[in-house]
Amino acid sequence: VLPADATYFPLVSGQYRVYTVQEERSAGNVVAPVVHYQLKEVLGAAYTDATGQVAYRLLRYRRPTDTQPWQVDSVWSVRQTPDAIVQTESGRAYIKLAFPLAQGSRWNGNGLNIGNPEYYEITAKNKAYRLFETTYPETVMVLQQNDSTLVSLNRRIEVYARQVGLVYRDAVQTSYCTASPGCIGRAIAEFHLRRTYQLLHYGQE
Image 1 (tube, rainbow, N blue to C red):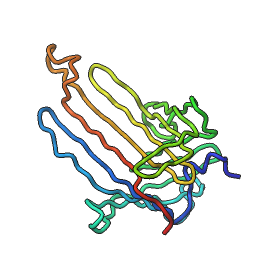
Image 2 (tube, rainbow, N blue to C red):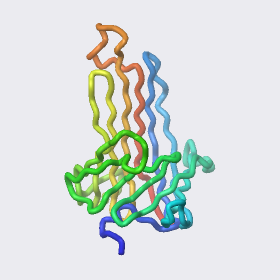
Image 3 (tube, rainbow, N blue to C red):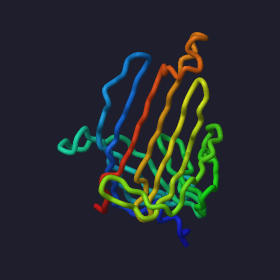
Image 4 (cartoon, helix red, strand yellow):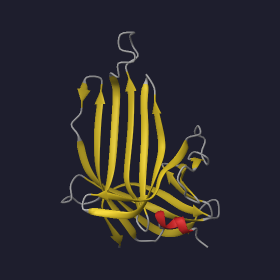
């Protein structure tokens, strides 16, 4: 029996989602042009993974614009356990959602990998979320990381919609200058990367 909240990350072979992605990147005084591209995720056929559980390949494609052909980007995988959604990205498993979903609930997103603990927190549940011309009536917002110090800023947020899956992701990674006493604490970025995903459309192939 699937948990009721599993519908925030539906696992149906052939389901696809297309995102518009924006990347901002800078290093020191060099600011790269903002890059836009599209990313498509397609849930492949179910299979039995090394742990003996049912999993699905997550086929990821990328193209510069909507007039270009899709090119293979990467292949991830995703599976559902009785109490979680686990997504494996580049060989590392992350607990994306932990059931039951409740505002304020927390879990270690790195609980199934060797990374340092990172506690994800649900900051909003069952709230409507508007993106472009679409309003998703029931969403859950997950704050994956929100670390701000004198030397760095790391923040990641994901929003999932019921019956749809991931609709929005924003990830910011900034390292500030610490080379001299004059720049410490002045938020002068030595490196900055921000990548934002917004769902354009989804469906079934």
